[in-house]
Image (cartoon, rainbow, N blue to C red):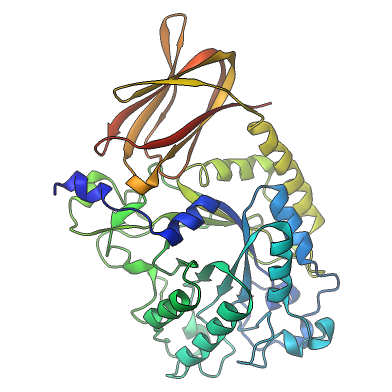
Length: 441
């Protein structure tokens, strides 16, 4: 088997395909930090401080549906250790808060709302726990797995468990916890076989920043051991971000032929872009006028969801437990903008000649093309060009590199009756699932 055959033999598993097909989903950061104005609280604040006055998980789901998101990931437990469900593992939870007289369960509420609105639910469970007395001891893995088991067995089918790699045990003067990630993974696979393990896990790769940026060429086929599954398995993930191999998740090139030739084994490891609509991840009133603009959100959308990544957009509820009016205003405009961006899908006919796909249609304005590879055959296209023939002259509209699960190519509006999709470089023969041409309103 030559190198190209090796590369294209790497394909996603069922779990990875499921989450890639979702493509766009929301993060909900909500918890003790919301009420004390911090991003990382230390696990010592009283549960009585947690008291949303008008919490509505339906509200969260309505916002998600309005912008086309397919699911919601909730911070069931952040680094402070405060749990948003009726857990038997700790007293530091919603059961000791005034919210619904200690009987509330926000994870259960979100489960019901997601079913109502046809969304999928995922959960974030921080491995770092600043409240637990077991943290830094041999008993912590038992504690953490007990929490995992509660979440995996009591709240229906989950599409992902999100494991944050942030850890600052030194801040609390505690020893570094040696996490038994293999045990965590095994438990998740056993109890929720269709659930992906994201961020610090084997299924989904962190893109390398929290700014909503992806690479020019975002590859899903990468060296198998270069990222060490992005875990903090060797003790904990430290600020120096050490990983195995000579590339890491901040490297610009992680999957070209030039990089892959230095390795013997490869893995399908798609990227996820996690970014917040605000400067912080939790709601803070002083950030009400710092919500990202529609133009910024659209740029992120095209350069993540539209660039072979999953987009995980964080929208934090305020102290009432609903999405703040400032965020809703922007998101409403964003939803309207997306409808206009994909207003008119053009009916086309296609002829294929070698590695050129020629699309013809009634003359109209076009400014956008969505291309999808059939990733059952791996990721193959390395470079492509979009052109149109105007009065016998070829005009270049867009020049791109990788495609993968989805590429959205945008360009200045042009009035034409044809589009040529030319594959300039490819790993063996291409497998294009579909190409759609759009005109914005």
